[in-house]
Length: 302
Image (cartoon, rainbow, N blue to C red):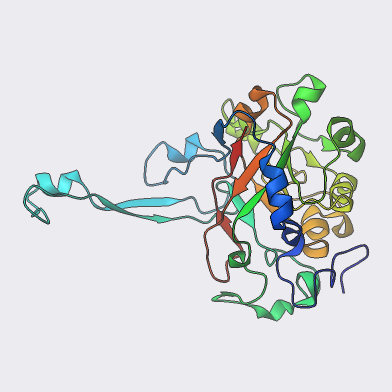
C-alpha cells in the first residue's frame, strides 16, 4: 500500500487514470473559457533523428538515453537512382521513426512508469508490467487531455533567465503565482532548456526542479497533471538522479501515490513571453498499449 496521503481507491478499485478523472465534461467546458485570443502555441521540443549528424547536439536530452532514430525508406534519391514511380507522375516519400520518449523528447509518463514495492498506483500488481508492456496503468488509459493550464514561470518571477542548477522550488513560491483549481494542469517553467544552447556539459551538470513539498502542495490541490520543461519534474544531480530520499521522490509522490500524470521536457519560452498565466492546455499521447509513456505535442491555446 502506498504511503499516506494518496489517491488509492478514491476513483474506484479498478481506476487506472488517477486525477485525470477530475476532467469531467463540466470541468473541460469551464477550462475552454481560458482561451481569449485563439492563438495556438506548441509546447514540444522538436524530434530530430540521431541519423542526422547534428541532431544529437541540437536537442536537449539526458545522457545515456537512446536518441530518436529517423530513417527514410523511400526518398527522392531512390527515384534519381531509377526507382519506378508508383503511378504515372506519382512519387512518394516514406519514413520510419523510433522514439524512446523518456529523457529524449517531450513526453508523458504513464502511471506504470515508476513505483515502490510490489504495487503500481491504486494497488495494481507491479508484476503486470511485463516484457511486452504494462497490462495495468499504461499510457493508452490517458486518452485526450483538455484542461486549464496554469503557468508557473519561476525564472520570470525571480527575474532570471533560468533557475540555478541546484534550485528546488518550494510550495510558497508556487502559491505566490497562482493556486490551481481541481483538474488544472500545472505547467512549471525552470528555463533549463535554454542552457543546452550554450553548453551541453552545463545542461548535464544537474537540473533545477520542484521540491517534494511543492509536489505535495500541487497534489493537495488536485491538479490533473504536472508538466515541466525539465527532465524529471523534480531536480537532478550530475549523475542524472534525485538527491531526495525515496519518500520524497517526485515520481513516487505524484505518479505512484496520487495518480498524477507527469509531462516532461516541454519548451515553454514562447508561452512565458506571451505573459499569460492561464490558458487551455491540450495533449494527447499516442495510444501505445502497455506503454510506460509516450511522446506528445502539448498545445497552449491562449
